[in-house]
Image 1 (tube, rainbow, N blue to C red):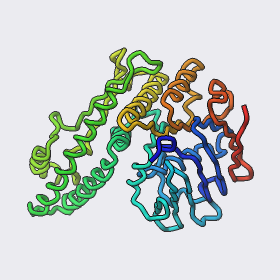
Image 2 (image 1 turned 90 degrees about the vertical axis):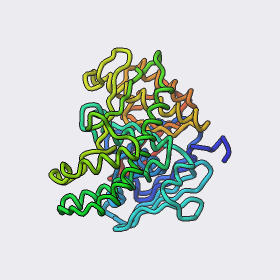
Image 3 (image 1 turned 90 degrees about the horizontal axis):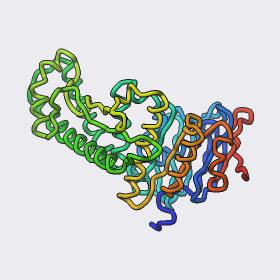
Image 4 (image 1 turned 60 degrees about the horizontal axis):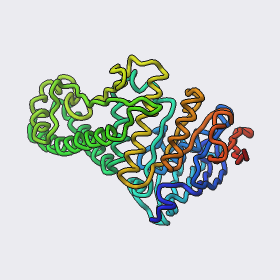
Length: 367
């Protein structure tokens, strides 16, 4: 895989993908600034790129939800990704399929071609809402470093669903629980170890004196002392059976973890920071994730930053663009007005997206 194409989308073609009936774009190595009115289809472009990575993309949408209406004939994404031809497709009532260079491939294979990170407006309340969103945020970062993390999480969750079914049905045969808890303990210990590795990498990649504040991240659990090893987890599941039986669900394990963040320079809980500070902390973490990936792989990830520029003053906006150019990877940014990207000038490719009677039309703009 040559360095000139690794980790980059050079062409993107969409067919009946949300608001895009037919869209074909060619990109170079520059960041891509996408502007246009709300509802025109800017975020849909970023979502399509996000699906070139394992998982359900930045909106976590089911394949059926993405199909363009009213045609409802299914959607297709075709892309040249890191020098490989990738095709994603979903027909009505059928799951999404993945092909790489004309051959069927599992989603995890996409992580070998490029790593994709994103920051979207729904993440702005990360520090204020429940632990589930923060676990998902941490697991997405962990997945970017260790692509097999996703399979470990899925295996743990499947065994836990089976155990929860036993709990709800009032089954008391220890042999049934033993078999499932062995699986949960093995996969759960792996989940904890990989999350810890990701936090270590993020810590080493954060900058104390940059334009975006460093965050101190701590992994906590529902239990005062969280079981972390395979043996400790297996013992904890066994001890917790009576309590879990009463609750009808598993109350101990990595699925109960939480990610706590602090504004390092102020030693302030992220929940107590201003809205602007919380946004700056998120941007700082995404940039740290990107720097750590570039250090580890030699290639910067693809960054998807949806409506980020609108929440920054001109100085911080310029600082963000400078960071993106220094990283040297591909970045896609959206905003309602072209003025939000004026600091980038010719250093970026500029696209305008408009709504033409319910269909997105995308045009490259000279600056």
